[in-house]
Image (tube, rainbow, N blue to C red; front, side, top):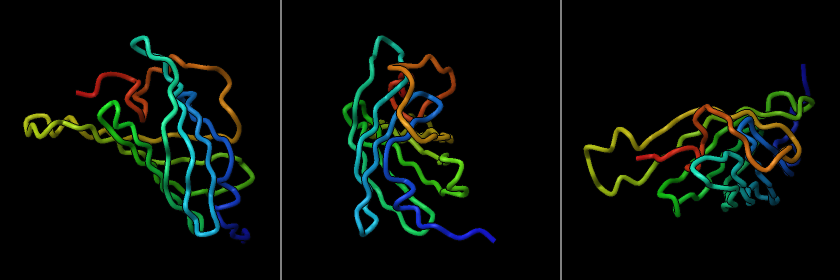
Length: 142
């Protein structure tokens, strides 16, 4: 049986995902997460941008949200560290876009997916990854 380690010290630091986006996480004694999200997907002439990140960690689970409201959306990730030795975690994300109270667009406003984050900084400034990313730089939402 594996020894259960709390997520707080494991999650703290710099991580990058398959889209070459980077998160920087700080976690206080209460489990509150703060940090930043740096986009890594280059599309439509956009370069990397940095956005605020906040969330919570407890036990071996965590959740955080990134405020992309300047682009009309927000994204949350929920995850769990299963194998601390792998220096990797999987997190499901849900992005919701502002549809400006237009009911006929409501079905388009929610995207879901999964990211895989590896410990350490991203390798390059931007990526041309083709799968839907968890942030608005991938493509026009609405």
